[in-house]
Length: 465
Ligand code: ARG
Image (cartoon, rainbow, N blue to C red; front, side):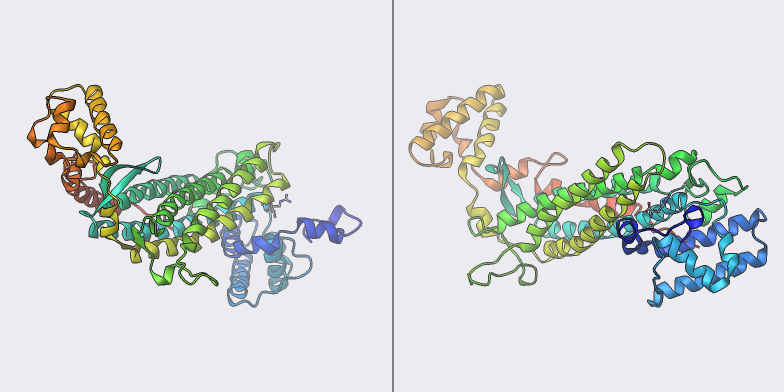
């Protein structure tokens, strides 16, 4: 126990069960030990440790690290959290000098430091998973630049699009997700170490050097803020929740498109599942999990914000509730990303099904555009095209089955070339302005996406020295 001096009695067992965090914060062992090594050097530079003591502490800490890494580390009864456990073991190994390590430091600046280092590492792993997903999306899109499929708004057939365009829409969502991670990483890479419990350290610790040793970009300017700021946690949880939201929307498309009523997509055997009773079933379970797990990703963000909102300055034990939410979101994201990526890579698109689902009425906008090209204001053109839809519906057909005379009856701006409007490939080819669905524009989009990928700086794991 690190703090028993003023207490006549040991903690109650139920209290320990409530407040010990070792069961989950042991995931910080590496960050905690590396942080302590850097801290030992920093206080040695002030003269609090002799060079010999500093060396003894550093090699003791490296031994503790080795024990964690080999699985030999044994938890003991008094180990309430990772910081306590490491210091306890260090002191067993090197003797009383281990007790000098905590001079001027508090678990408050220590845990904030550990967590930031851990979050930066996790951000880089999530970022790498997203980069793989982007590559898979580009490759799949590139193979289907020309393939026609129905595009939807309100899940109602809207206009023909190309399958490559549909796939690339997710590339750009993921590119923003990765930008967001980079941006959040910039703010997470700020060292709170040397903030002490709340008021700063009374020893002349070189915080800038300490920050640099740990791979941080800078250090916090205010110790009160330094120990209690969890913005970096909230931002990461938000980034994860929004990544989940994007994956969930992709999942929803895939679930719908793989339904036999649509049949646009066939999922690979390795990434779909059957039913124990209905032999014909091919379920998109992993996509349903992407959709379902997004619920907990959003819940974890909400939970943390609620924890933070009423806290008085500075550290409060409530802040111990910040970790499991992040572990849960990161673990689930790292389970999801490789499977979602593999699903994209192995997805089979069925051009015949997509084509068969293209209804002639999906060219009603093109019919209006035809009249616009003849000089009619779009509002009137829209109205006339709507009348064509209505006329066709009254006969139980689509506008593509109307005759030239039918069109003449609606407007004398129609000439014989109107029949050329009813060509799905021509419809998408017209949408060739940047960002449009025309194969030509999608090819340009893919080139731009490849450029984005080659220029984007991934989030780097912290290099602990
Ligand atoms: N386990 C604690 C946490 O995660 C470490 C900080 C403890 N600080 C304190 N003043 N009790 O927040």
